Structure formats: C-alpha cells, structure tokens
Amino acid sequence: MDAMNQTPTQTIQTIITQIEETIRGKRLQVELALCAFLAGGHLLIDDLPGVGKTTLAKTMASVLGLHYGRIQFTSDLLPSDILGTTYFDSAQSAFRFKQGPIFCQFLLADEINRASPRTQSALLEAMEERQVSIDATAYALDEQFFVVATKNPFEEVGTFELPLSQLDRFMLSFSLGYPQTQSERAILTRAAAHTAPTCTLEPGALSALRAACASVFISDELLDFIQEILHFSRESGAFESGLSTRAALSLVAAARAYALIRGRDFATPQDVIHLLPFICAHRLRPKNSALRPHELILAAVHPDP
Image 1 (cartoon, rainbow, N blue to C red):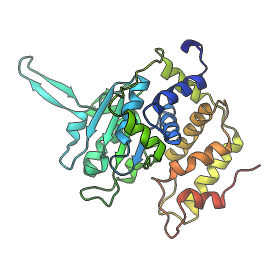
Image 2 (image 1 turned 90 degrees about the vertical axis):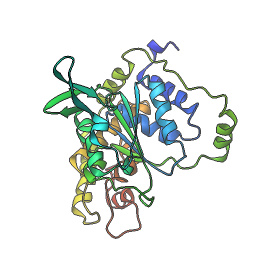
Image 3 (image 1 turned 30 degrees about the vertical axis):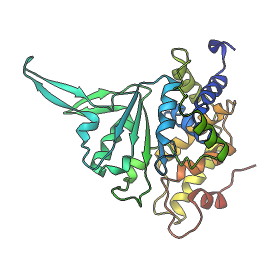
C-alpha cells in the first residue's frame, strides 16, 4: 500500500514492523515506547546495562526520522553541559548562546541516575514545556521533542535516586529484560551484517499521527474509572503519595495513543488497565505490601461493565 494512502493505524504498524527488524521479541516494549511518543510524553527505561535500551532509542529515532541526540549522564555533568551556555563573542562585542545537546528532536538521556539531582533537574522545564530558559531568555525546542531516559538499578554504585518531580514527567516506564533464546540467536546471527533502519515516513506524518491520537474518544465513564484510580491512590493510605493530575493526564493521553495503535478511534477500560502498570511503576511506592502498585489499585477499583 502507498504510504500516502495508509490510515494512521497502518502507518503505526509499519513503524513497529521496522523497529522490530532490530529490536527482536519485544513487541510490548516497542508499542509502549511508540505510545509514549505519539501521546506527547516521555519514556523511562529502568534495566540492567547491555539489554538493548540504547539500541531501542537509536532505532526508534532512525525509523521516525528524528534528529537524534545523546547525553551520557555522569557524576560531574553540569546543567550547562545539557542546556548550553551564554558566552561573550569578542569579535561581535555581544553575548551569544551556544546550544547544548538538548536541542534535538529525540534525546537519549543515558544512565540518567548517574548524575546529581541538580543536573537531572535541568531536564524539567524541557520535558514539561518544550523550552529551555537561559539568563531569562526562553529558547523553544522542536515540537516533536521526546526524551528516552535509561536508568540503572539504584543498587549500583555511583547512582542517585531520581526526584519525584523528575519521575512524574515520564509518561511511561518499563524494563526490557533479557531477550528470549530465539530472539537472542537472531541478534547474534545478524550482528555483523545489520544496518540501521531508515525513515520511510512522509513529511508531516508524525504530526498527523499525534493529531489522530488527540482525536480518539474518551467517554465520561472511562474518565470516571480513571478518577476512581486517582482517588484510591491518594486516599487509601496504601502509598507514600498518590498519583498526580499530571499522571492522570498521562494516562488519558496514553490510552488514546494505545487505542489508535490497536486500530480504534475510542479508548476502553482495558486500554487503561493495560497501561496502568507502566504509569504507576515509577510514581507509586507502596507502604506495606508485596503487591505491585497497579495490582493494589485494580484489586480495589474496577471499571463499570
């Protein structure tokens, strides 16, 4: 089928197929990553080194045709190393702003928890408002600006815990895990000959996909269900703190994107239930329970039939 005549869902499936040529056996994670991008959010991947976090980010950026930038977070990284700096141009007798690596479309914040919370906070404005403020001047980022941050387990030496304000700005989080045996064999077999995928999308396709996501219908009943989830997280006493309004907005936007991935123009309670683990994992900390956050919530809150 001609790319120009594809429906949004068909375009999305083409994107997923191209990513899966490199990222084998991780359909769920590929869909979630694309869901976060289409919904206008950001993604946190929390896993051990060497399982494909960076490969997923680079492959996704290449398939989407986005300008890719990478920042390796370290303990001595400064906010100016991310955002940029103002310097005096003696030849022009004027102050100039030199852009930092954050000025891209697709940013990989690699091992984000190896930098101090002060340096991590340099991303807050960019992730929320898609702009950077330096010396009282705001510099706009690209409308497609998307952050994929990788995070090593907190038990590793030389890591810092991410502040809640930073965690809440990630729409979804997940772990990749080790590949299945058959998928790993395919990776090992084609490692030497593999070439990076290229973008086949038409100009404006990504903006059209995001617009299609925004038009997916959310019923009042579904909003009631989401608000019941919020209420339980805040009032049950099961968690150190409840889900924020930003988290609720993320759940609504992600449900719209996931519905579109599934070929529907309306979201369902099952979309919310499917996404809830990845909305809650990095936001909610149970006080006294062996259950995971989404399991606690779904045990108490159920959608109306």
